[in-house]
Amino acid sequence: MARISVIGTGYLGVTHAACMASLGHDVVALDVDKDKVTSLAAGIVPFHEPGLPKLLKEALAAKKIHFTSDWTDVAAEADVHFLCVGTPQLPESSAADLSQIKSAISSLAPLLTKSCLIVGKSTVPVGTAKWISEYLIANSPAGKGVHLVWNPEFLREGFAVEDTLYPDRIVLGIQNKEDISGLTDIYASALDASTPLVVTDYATAELVKVAANAFLATKISFINAFAYLADEVGADVGTLADAIGHDTRIGRRFLNAGIGFGGGCLPKDIRALQARASELGLSEHFEFLKNVDEVNKSRRNYVVELARKTLETLDDKTITILGAAFKPDSDDLRDSPALGIALALSKAGANIQLHDPVALPQVRARNLPVTAIENVEEVFDGADLVLHLTEWKLYREIDPKTIGEKVANKRIIDGRNVLDRDLWSNAGWQITYLGKPGSQAAL
Ligand code: UGA
Image (cartoon, rainbow, N blue to C red; front, side, top):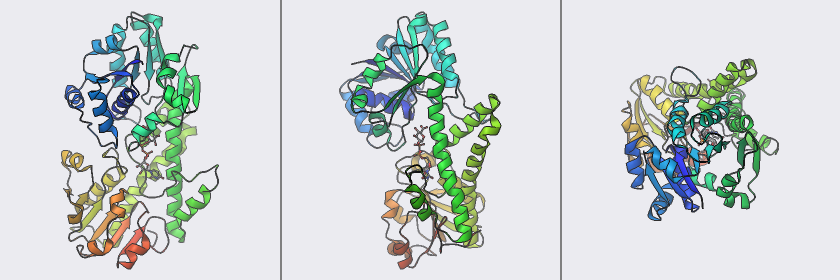
């Protein structure tokens, strides 16, 4: 079994660390945030991810993992170091902020006295791995004994454990035909299960990650552009997606029209890719991603205007919002379309009653102008309009008859196009979808 360090305990780092420990490796996980280290050491995962708290507790009990803020622990206890720090969008630009990467490698390099493997998993602009490798070789006592492999991560929030243990593919970017057996041994269980392995150069490995996210984002904005058309001409975007999705060259997944994509990855990754393409003098070829971003952001305004049209005015209206997280099975509010719509409606004068099965602590921590309501039974009271914005299973199980007695008006906009039309209509509701006929006139 390998001696592993995981640097950075965000979404990616905690999941990777716990999963590697569950495979039997000895893991030390570092974060510069000491409070985070303390709570992780107590088995508390600071975000909602199905299956992860159990895995972490088991690994702690088996003494297969421990958490630290001390870089000397990392250097002393591991031969393979996974770089999992965040690369968020810079506040004043669309480019990625690489300060956490720079800080991590400058702390680690002077402590690398013997040959080791550094494995980059963070999402970075193409060209980053090359300078990280050069920096590590130049600044580590072990010099050329420090080998960098670029190994992008493709996990989805809500399925993070499954995606880490059973990935669709493993991509390894190398530079000089380095010996990667240390890493393939760590991933032996996935590779033994015939997970495709792609060994390539640094630049290609870095690009695989951003290309995958750019493609997924493009699929969503593509179908959302057709949702606008569908609303205009009375077509059904869901049936359209089903029909084109039967073509295996296209595929049905990521063609669900609605309020668009959010989260900590797709939005910032398509922006960082445009910024990098522009640095390389290729911006004109990546203009389409600007459109992808614009179509996506416009979906939020579209729903706000739809609500205004439904209610005539938003001023002092009571609007119930189902869902705050950017997608179900997550409590992540980063760039959440649902939360964006809630705040825009509040700004326009509406009183927002917001429910989410897991994200309300995060909502409260942000001190937002919405009333966060814990009990889903109570969120409908007196509502002039209900918006279904994050497709938690719980909301599909609501009985429209029962809640129909609590609202002021039985009107609902389904921003995710998943609620059962017959069920809601038969209970006397006016249900409006995005891009489906008979539900609304085009704005
Ligand atoms: C995304 C990618 O799917 C992962 O492969 C990748 O590893 C990850 O980013 C990352 O870069 O770390 P994630 O951000 O967890 O994963 O979320 P997705 O499942 O991709 O969903 C993104 C957004 O698209 C959500 O807001 C979701 O509601 C929306 N979406 C998804 C749609 O609007 N329509 C769809 O058909 C699918």
